[in-house]
Each structure stands twice: as structure tokens, then as C-alpha cells.
Image 1: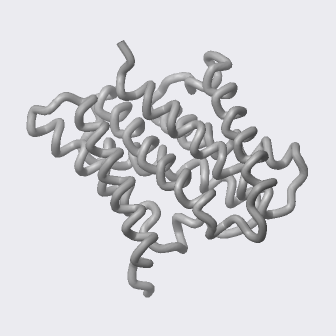
Image 2 (image 1 turned 30 degrees about the horizontal axis):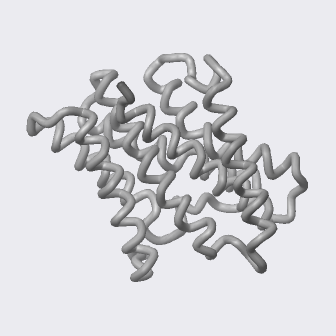
Length: 202
């Protein structure tokens, strides 16, 4: 039987590998740089999540996660040859980015609940897993991480973690709550992109 974590993790790995690799292509990096950013974006958030709950990162225990991430990198290389102009605001990067954000928010929440963390801990893990890899990739590209400067990016993941916790607290299964969390995050992120939502600046 396939569990929610495995499905969400698979979706998130491919989506974020595509996103990271396309960011690298957009920055005119060579093939090695494209692969590094793709793999880092896919695995970075999950690695930080696992370290925080005191377990060996899944990506270091088998080649499965890395292999899936390489598939995403390959897809990105194919996409970059089909899309002209800058990729940052193209649907080719925005849609997989939203999908990866949603999937990894759900996996982070699941791990947090499984580790017996507080509601705050569950929300933090959901958010960190969703935005961690992309933030590391932005730092390698010497720019302020998008999570700190742009619209509703981390906010949907944070709210998704709250939704997950509320559903589990209400007696629903963690798998159902994870799916609901992912759907919620995806919808909010896509609506935010469509309507150009942003948080107020100080």
C-alpha cells in the first residue's frame, strides 16, 4: 500500500528538481550547475527536516530520492530548450514550484506529527520542508531567498501546516490531513499568483 508521505515526497522531489534546475538555467549556469541546483532544491528542505527531528536524511539512506531528483533535472533540461526568454515568471517554473511547495509542506507536517512535535513544531516543519531547498538554491545564486521578499510563498505552506494539525486534532487520519494540506497549499499559492497577492511591507 502506498502511503501519503511516499506519494507527496515523490511529487515534491520531481517538482522542485525541475524548479531548481530551471532557476540555474535562467542564471546561465553550466550543466553541472543546473544539476547541483536541481538536486539541492529537491533535497534541501527534506534534509533539514530530517536533521531537526534527529534522523538520518532519507536522501543519504538510499539512491531513490537522488534518482528521482535527477529525473526532474532531466525534465528541466528538456523544458529549457523549449521555452524562450527568462524562465522565472514562466508557467514552466511557477506551476511545478507551487506543486513542490504543496507536496513538501504535507511531508513536513507528516514527519512533524509522527515525531510527536507540538502544533508549532508541525507548522515549522511543514514550512521549512516546503521552502528550505529553494532558499538554499537562492543563496547559491547570491540573491535574497524568495521566501523573504516575495508575495505569498511561505505563507501557504505555513497555513497548510495549520490545516494539517487542525484536521489531525479533529480526529482525521494523518494521510487524509496530508492530502488536504497539499491541496490547500496548492490552491492558495495558485490563487496568490493569479491575483498577485503580497504581504504588506514595513
